[in-house]
Image 1 (cartoon, protein in one colour):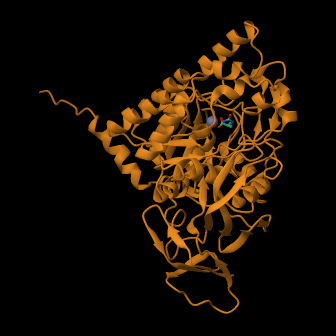
Image 2 (cartoon, rainbow, N blue to C red):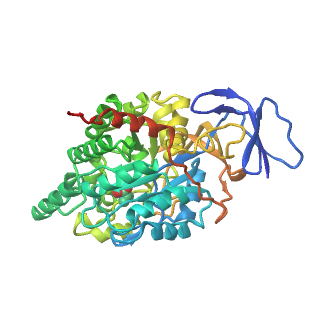
Length: 480
Ligand code: URQ
Ligand code: ZN
């Protein structure tokens, strides 16, 4: 397969320049002005468009078994939908039930992902501790390209990791040169507040944000950061949604700690008024954790991205239909937590970030692709436009507009949390591993062509995280 992308302006996390790109099979093989078009090559006219690295979504949950049901988008529908919006790789999660083998669960999820239409990788969640967990982590890191282990501090009674699990897991991650990632909400407090609210007769979706206010996220985020500091392992906070959590992250970074922060596209533009919608279904569709916050938190998140204190954006795509959300009709704690969005993230960041003057073109690429590749140690194979990089490339028309709607989206879920939002800045072509998989509305996703991406341990950030820890070591006093 040979593709030439002609006449565009290449935008990477570092540079913006006019040039053509030639891809051969699944790699970029040449970048230059007025490139020759080999006979038989496919040509994409990128005149007036930006040509960028395909988006990387570092947090998704395809077909996740969760809260008594399964997320409705699977590894085929989700990867197909994301390519229409300009994302060419996702990092999903293996989430073992307590007391089940991490390694066996990894193989189960690998089986589910064989139908993927684009590249993918897996963080693995440590949801319990006992015989075999450390050895499974070692095998996953050394033999299966897993360099990140997830810890849900929320979801008590299900997948919640307490301090003991985190301390033990963080120590093994440090031994392996792996990143620890965190869902930072205090699950004990959430359970307590949920019980109180139900007792008070607050059973609708408006109870959801009240059971997990920003303080609950701030406490857990800070606690996990401190644990990582004392153990000397780099830490990545997923879906940072509040100023409370952001303050803890910024304070740690200013102390020299290696802490990364991810922001969801939906948390940047949707606020907590959705939970007071008179239509129960609309309010329930927005039940996700952490919840949507009062508006003031959105500007703090934008400032985090603009300043580089937040590095990545994701969607946490975990989609449930109206039917599934109705499982919590009489009790908000039973509404499956999760929203969709992996198809719209790039347009949301462009329209509300670049068009509004918040993000430069290069910052857009950094926070939608390159930084995730760097943090999870697959750069510049992914997240870059360089000779030798994977040919994951998108062609972006900054003048084209579209209105986001469940009526026209490719995601399987019957609701779109950005319903009716008009965005200017649209992906018009996607090249995934050198194949044109989307062109002017024509989706050509192929089931099963997506490949698993190994992510090596001991990223460059690892040494930095270990250094701070070494500085804290006590030296023995030799007494005569
Ligand atoms: O917590 C997560 O990230 C998963 C279970 C998706 N659901 C959610 O509400 N964020
Ligand atoms: Zn989460």
